[in-house]
Image 1: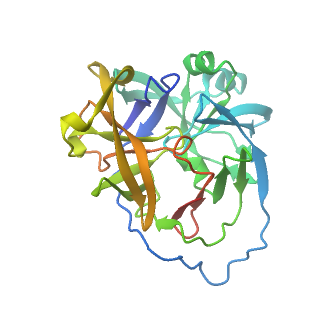
Image 2: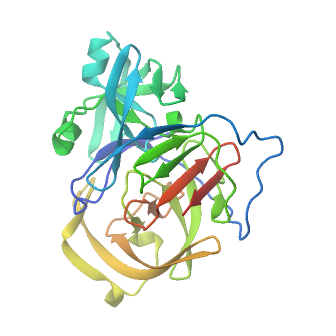
Length: 301
């Protein structure tokens, strides 16, 4: 599994460099409500955890890392492996195994480590292999302290719903919904199948991205249909790349979302990446998105 640092759109109030690996995924959509598995206990306990939405996209919750309570944790479905801040690692006397980490800006040294138990509401992750990362750059951009980044390797240990209207993450069983499509693969990342202007694309489901982005070498469109925004940019290995915008009809499964702004990144996606872009939520008009890992479903309202 290749690990790297992805930086989101700079025009969307700050570039956030997060750890990611490269998946090869494809999902199958359904046009009708997807039944739940027999025997599921719908009365199973749920817990709600409030979150702060920073920079209009990044979810910050309170968590416990080992014995350290009430720390800020960034939740990001587009990140794996999870990371803890160097400050927390020093406080807990954690020392990882040094190795090379491939990033967009080159190869750096990083420490792989078995993370201490991490608890967020009812979600409890133990013996997760993650990394120690200096998150000072991110803390400065957000203006808060951070204990770490909870990525998909932690979040996929239980189903949850992100309720943007109420600013809550609800951990626990998820009710069946007509607006749901299946994941092809749940690890190391999630992707879904969507259509943009009638073209089928594979999108990495990424709560750390505010909206919809596709790479220009993965999407066919006439140049005259694109609107150039001089403020928009994206960090790449060769420097900053421009981002252009397309207004296009987007659909997930049988649900037509209508016309949406699609960012077209003026950068080639690595051919080994089996996805064409990123799907975020905060600016897509979703009031809720759900991750049903028991049944392998992504849902939205």
